[in-house]
Length: 264
Image (cartoon, rainbow, N blue to C red):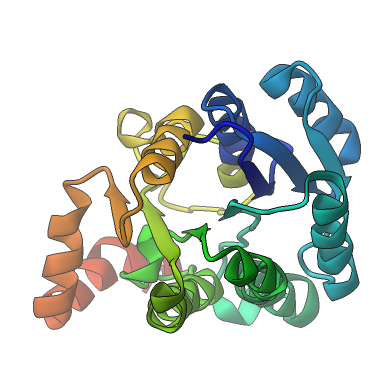
């Protein structure tokens, strides 16, 4: 069924994006790899599809770059069946310590506006086809805002709202919109977040997902679209607790983390 279908993956140079490229190529998709690090994209192209993939240097924070990536895809393959909006980054600090441009504006630009603008660029092609599937990468931070994640959470909450509204806009046109909400993932992304914990608190290694875990969820969605996937599934309880008992969550987080980190 996926033979000759075309999938665009942003943030494809490493981690979840690269793992998803490998698995989707095995499903028969023709892969478009989009990221800023072109040299790594070429390596992924060889790993994923024996070189039979299209690497395009792309900055999802730049509209011209997005439009070039989409137009090049259409010129090369003539269609777009799947868009996996995976590109993103995080800077995990107290709000007052974040750089206004490089760490606040840039996170919103890439993590939220990049998703919106890339989606908008592919929509006319999917609408003309009468089919298409957009998978947006979110996070547990889209449901639960935690200290030092303020801007990252703002962007991911935005992705959740954007995806919900978009699904209700384009579902009647034959398009599917899905969102993935993973917990902590052991990738380069996490290593570059810059979290400096005085208490040493972090997600235990045995609770972290691998890039392949998330990529497998991407493939399952590609085979059978769903509105959302939360992985691991038991995190649904944390979402439920945060929604129905916000004061309790405030109390736990402030005492277990915030006060200790701020040394109050």
